[in-house]
Each structure stands twice: as structure tokens, then as C-alpha cells.
Amino acid sequence: MKYISGLLLALMLSSPVVSAATLKIATLAPDGTNWMKLMRQAAKDIKQQTDGRVKIKYFPGGVQGSDKSVLRKMRIRQLQGGAVSTGAMAHIASAALLYNLPFTFRNLDEVRAVRNEFDPVIAQALADKGYIMLGLSEGGFAYLMSDKPLKTSDDVRTQKVWVPEGDIVSQTTFEAGNVEPISLPVSDVYTSLQTGLIDTIAANPTGTIAMQWHTKLNYATDFPLIFLFGMMIVDERAFNKLSTADQTIVRQTMADTFKAMDAQNEKDEIGARKALEQNGMTFVELSDADKALWQELANKALAELKAKNVYPADVFARLQQTLENYRQQQPQQQTATAE
Image (cartoon, rainbow, N blue to C red; front, side, top):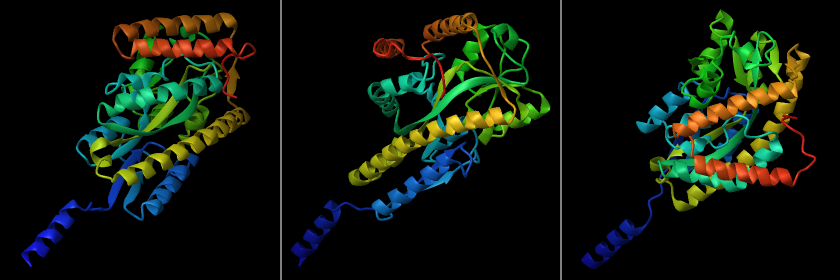
């Protein structure tokens, strides 16, 4: 009898105990957007495929605060994850900024030409710091938008320019052009446009419409500054509580979802730009000379950011070489365009 009881106890201790886990994930993305629709479908698929063992609860629309607040709540385990800007992770893993440096890409094809090689680099850098990256989301190109046409950095100096809170790349880029930007969380942008605290932003067409910022802006400089990315991360401590099989399901489902999301975002960006134009926003074309001056400004900012070790210069040099090789294979490639 003692032998049987001991055997049962040993079997119980050696058998994996599977318990339900809820991943609470916050995002600034408004509810009802295509992004959130795809994310909610992913949550349903994960719950179904894990037989209810893994559930995802989203907090959209910034109800949990800024990216900075989300990361703080992850550290104290109030949240298990967040969909945040890549810039928000720069102080944690500098590789998160690889795709977000000014004028790195000329078009969407170039972005996708480097992702297979460098997405894993970013994911590993975050994993080394205790964060699991479940996906990178292509947000489209950011354009300078204002209440007046802007062509040069001299024009921008007369404006009250917003940069996202904690975004050292944008901050340094504008400061390189002798512009003193105003740092605010995303949640404060609309009110600040209303009150006149700011009158100029850099944003992608889809985000501008989703946040209703376009209602306070009249012009967009038709020269993309940077390509925007968002990322979904979860705390390694929470993720490791899932079984290996469930981790695989979550990773694969999210990978498929982010792939579908990128395709949808591409369509949305094209449609959003057309909608902005139809609603009266003027896209201001730049001369080659103006573009060259902006590139000089970007190079100056990159040099300053490199000196501060803000991004991994060696890895970025590899990325630039990969881009150059790609461009040499695309002799008819057009310069910067979001369409």
C-alpha cells in the first residue's frame, strides 16, 4: 500500500501541471481599427488551439497609459505584455531602433528586403533583456505634417514640433536642424493641436486619421522621414509559464497574424493617404536640392546618435550594406514613396 501511494505521488509530481494563463496586453491602438480586429481574432485562435489554457486580454486605446507606463506595469507584473513603438524599447535594447533611423528606407520594398535578416537580430536583443517579441508591425512612412507648408528645416524652425515622449531619434534629428521640439506622450497630441501647444507632427497617414490629428493639419511634406514599426512584446517570466507546446502555438499564430497585418497596413496606408488628400490635405513636393538638405540633416543626426551609442552602429552598417546590395539589383527602383 505504501508502495502504491509512493508511486502515485511520484507520477503526480512528474506529470506537467497545465493551468490557464491570461496575458494582459496594452496598446495605444484604438479599438475598432483593423489592427485590433486582427489582434482579437488572434486571441480567439490561440484560446481555441490551446483548449482555453492561454487567453489574451487587450487594453486598447491607451487606457493603460503611454508606452512608458505600459513597460513600467510589465516590470511590476500588472501587465504581461504591450504593443509599443520600437522607439520605446531603445533604452532596453538599442537594436530595436535598427529600422527607425531617419531616411534609412526609400520605399516599402526596401523595408521588406532586410527583414528576414534583421528581425531575428532585434528579437534576440530583446530576449537577452527578458522580453519575448511576438511580432513587428509595419506602420508605414511618417511624414512631416503641419498647419503650413514645410520644405526645409528653416521652415520647421518657426513651428512648434511634437516628438513622442522618450523618442531620442526624433529629438536628436530635429535638434540637429536647430529645432527645439516639444516632447509629449501620444495621448496628449490631439489636445495639444487643439490648444496650439504644437502645430507640427511627424506621423503616418493611417495613424493621423485614427487619432483624428488630421482635422487640425493642412499640409504634409511629401518626403518620408522614417518608417514606423510597432512591436508586440511579452514578459519572458509570463511567457515561460506556458508549456512548450502552447508557446509554439502563440508564436506561430502571432507570426501569421502579423504577416496578415502587414498586408492590411499596406492597403490602409494607401487608402489613408488618398483620404487625407480628399479631405483637403496638400502633400508638398520637394526639389532634389531640398531632399539633399534633409539627408544632410539626417546624416548629422545619425553621427550624433552613433556617438551616444543609441543604436548598434556595427549592425546598422550591415543593414545599410544589405540595402545597398538590394538597390544595385533594382536599377529602376523609384525613390521614397509610400504608395
